[in-house]
Amino acid sequence: MFDSLSERLGRVLKNIRDQGRLTEDNIKDTLREVRRTLLEADVALPVVKDFVEQVREQAMGKEVLSSLSPGQAFIKVVHDQLVKVMGEQNQTLDLTAAPPAVVLVAGLQGSGKTTSTAKLARYLSEREKKSVLVVSCDVYRPAAIEQLKTLAAEVGAEFFPSDTSQKPVDIANAAIEHARRQFKDVVIVDTAGRLHVDDAMMAEIKALHRAVNPVETLFVVDSMTGQDAANTAKAFNEALPLTGVVLTKTDGDARGGAALSIRQITGKPIKFIGVGEKTTALEPFYPDRLASRILGMGDVLSLIEEVERKVDHKKAEKLANKLKKGKGFDLEDFREQMLQMSNMGGVGKLMELMPGMSGIPDKVKAQVNDGQFVPMIAIINSMTLHERQFPQVIKGSRKKRIAAGSGTQVQAVNRLLKQFMQMQKMMKRMSKGGMKNMMRGMGGKFPPGGMPPPGGMPF
Image (cartoon, rainbow, N blue to C red):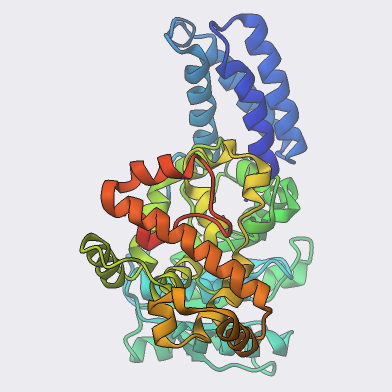
C-alpha cells in the first residue's frame, strides 16, 4: 500500500535525518523534494501547498532547530502533518439511532460499492456484533443484485430480495420495514453507480436519501484514481450530505494521492479502507497509523489487533508450552503456522505493519513469497503422521511418494525440509533464550520463505 510514496519519502527524509543541525537551506531543499514527491503521488496541489507550508513553519520553530536530534524532530513534524491532513483520528460509524440504523452506500460505477457493502456487513457482524440486513437498489444492473445476494450468504448477513421492475425507494422502504419486524440492528442499502453530472440519477439518489433518512451516507471511491477521487467525492457531497468515505483498492495503490487529498478537499473523513478482494479485507481508517506506515515506522497497533483477531491463541499457547518442555518443533507445527500466517494475510501484509521493514533491502523482501505456502502445505498434507513428527525418516522413496501425492517435484520436498530445519533451529533458540537470541541467530536475514510464523512471535 502506497509503496512508491513511502519509498520516495523515506529517501528524502533519510538525508535530513543524518544532519547534525537543521538550517534554512537544508530544510528548504528537503521540502522541495517532499513537494515533488507528493505531487508525483497525485496529491491535490492545494493540499501539497498547505502541507509544505505547515511543515516549513513548524520545522523553523525554536523547539525543532534546538532539538538534540533535529532530523528526528523534523520527521515528527512531517508525521504529525500527515496525520492532520488525513483527519487526526479514526471516525467510526455513528449507529446510535433507533434500530434499524440505515447506512446508504453511493459511488461511481466500478468503484466497489457492492463488495464494500458486503465487507461492511461482515465488519459490523463480526466486530461490532450487529445483526445486519443488506439490500440492493441497483435496478439497472441485475447482476449487481445477484452479486450482493451471493456475498451476503458468504458474510452471514440477511439479504432482502429485489428486482429490476421495482423502484429504488420502494425497495429500500420495504427492506427497512422487514428489518424492523425482524429486529435487525443495521440495514445497508447498496445503490446504483452514477456520475455526479447525471441529473436524473442524482435526483433519484436524493429522493432515496430523503425516503430512508440514513444515519450514515458513505461514498465509495477507488483510491487508484488519485486526486480525482477527492474531486468526485466533493462533487457528490455538494449534491448529497455525505458522512464519510470508503477508500477501495488501496492494496494496489502505490501513490496514495486519494488518501492524502480527500479529507482536506471534501471536509469528510475516510472511515474505512479496502485492502484486498476478500470480504474480510476492510479496515477502519486510522490516520496516525497510516502516516507511520507511509514513513516506514510500521503499525504496531494494527499488527497486534490482527494477531488478536486471527491467531488461534489456544494453538499458539499449546506450541509455546510444547517448546518449553523441549519436545521440539515438528512438521505438523510448521503446517499449522503457515495456515495461521495465510489467515492473517500472509507475510507481505505483516511486513507492512512491522517497524523498520522499510530499511530492509529489496532482495531480502523478494524472498518473501506467500504463494509458496499452498504447495508447502500440500506437501506436508501428503505425509503420514509419523513422517510429520519424525522428519528425519523421510528419505528417497518416501520423498518420491510425497511429491507424487502433492503434485510437486522431489526438489520441492527437499526445499521444504530445508526450510523446516531452519525454522526448527530458530524455534529451538527461542525456547532457550527468547526472541533476542533468535534474531541474533538470524543475523538480520529471513529464512527462505519469509518471517518467523505468528505462533513463534511474542504476541
